[in-house]
Amino acid sequence: MNTITRVAAALAGAAVALGTAVAVAAPANAAVSDGYYKQPFDATIWHVDGGIARAVGFEEWAGAGFPEPLASPTDYVKYAWSPTVYAVTFWGDPESTWDWDRLTEAQWHASGSPVPRTAGWIAGSSYYQWGTSGEIFVQGEDGVKHKLTYAEWAASGFRGYEWRSTQGFMKLSWAPNIMRITNLSTGDGYSIGYAEWSAEAFPTPQVVQRIVNDRFYKYGNGPTIYYEGAAFSRAISYTEWVGAGRPVPEIRQPANPGNSVDCTNFATQSDAQAWFDTYYPYYGDVAQLDGDDDRIACENLP
Image 1 (tube, one colour):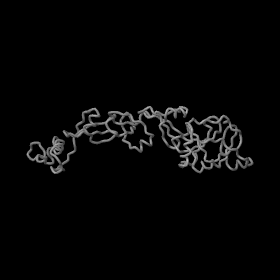
Image 2 (cartoon, helix red, strand yellow):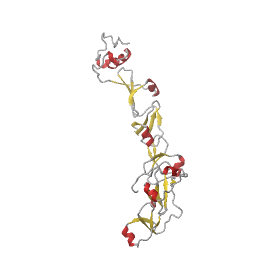
Image 3 (cartoon, rainbow, N blue to C red):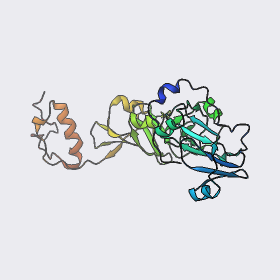
Image 4 (cartoon, rainbow, N blue to C red):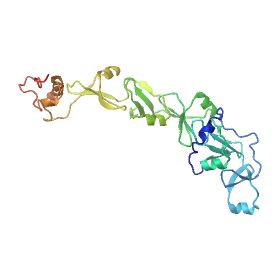
């Protein structure tokens, strides 16, 4: 590929004129006659000999007597979902003989600013499927990703795809986060934002109630239940816990808080009692919230 930049937004208007996507096909007369050729967007001279094309240097061209190069059999294509325009030169019938160039805006103008055909396939594209859905995606040579419709996959000639069986996207049925799972067998992954989901072409997440190796827990006798998994690690509400199927939480020993609070830190007696009940079984009344040792904290609070 040549040195690369993206064709500017001038193509946006031209894109409206593009027709239905079709797989790139060489013209019927794809067998190019022997001789010297030049592509309109590049100064390189090509020599075709016996159906094989190769770029030649100045000395070789001079030694041949500076023959006037013929116009190359070049077409211009793009994906419907990407602004990038490619020149494809058909030196022969097999795809392996075609020369592909991602055009700069200057090269596109040098070619006469042609309206590119919508291609179903462009060289350098990779096709793949995540382990959490049946959707097929393509990543173009320019890095742009797209979720294919069946018609678009058909237009590519039903290109083979990589099955990324150990990776995918999930969403908990009781929480809004979309997760990128990097290892489905271990539940490793992380919550993603809209920008990353968009960049991945909006893969449909598999909706699940639980993730492998996630945890529900609480500290001692405290009322708060916490969740720990790929989506997030935080305290959850009663509604979320019910949505998760009411899993029995693990009981974890809290760290000793020491004498870090007093009754003025709580708005209500029930708040103070919850704090007291969390730590008392392990460390006793470390914050001295129970002055009369009846195990009722901050009795003067409302």
